[in-house]
View 1 (cartoon, helix red, strand yellow):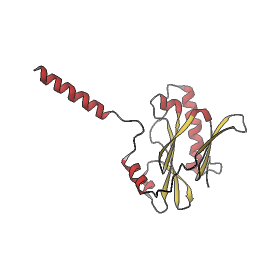
View 2 (cartoon, one colour):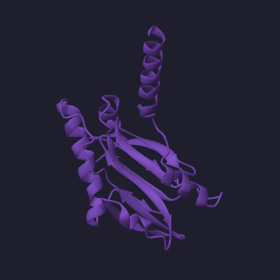
View 3 (cartoon, helix red, strand yellow):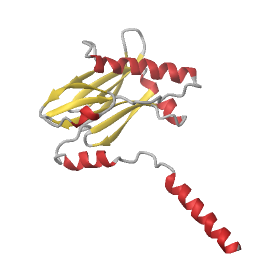
View 4 (spheres, helix red, strand yellow):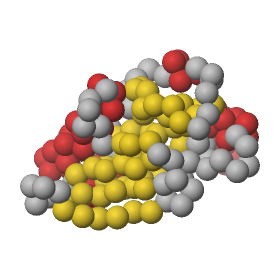
Length: 177
């Protein structure tokens, strides 16, 4: 009888471990997209980060790559991860650390003519350059820590800036090179 209890206990623990999500795992779709890309293309090639001050005295942070420049305010509140050779994600640091996701937007490069991005629930076309279509993919769920007022305000301020991409605004924070 005791052996059965131990077997069921080990099985239950094993299934719990298997069901816990791993941090920063690649989706099957991301892996396929990455595998399809030519070896020489990398959305993050020559990536550099620069900090500055905007015209209103606020902190800005700039992500500059061979393919685009993204300039956002609230520089100390957000960061990025390179997801694959075709994708970079911008996230709110405080919300990610609070295990609330924190994703603000993912910048994804598709081959020209590949319209798979049209299946995304929320996106904006940034533009087309050198055989690539650049997409801003937005989260479809709440990604901020609503219990932390400052983190919520910072998340919303940067998210509002990023929505200028989707809206096609003339003062979009991203410029393709």
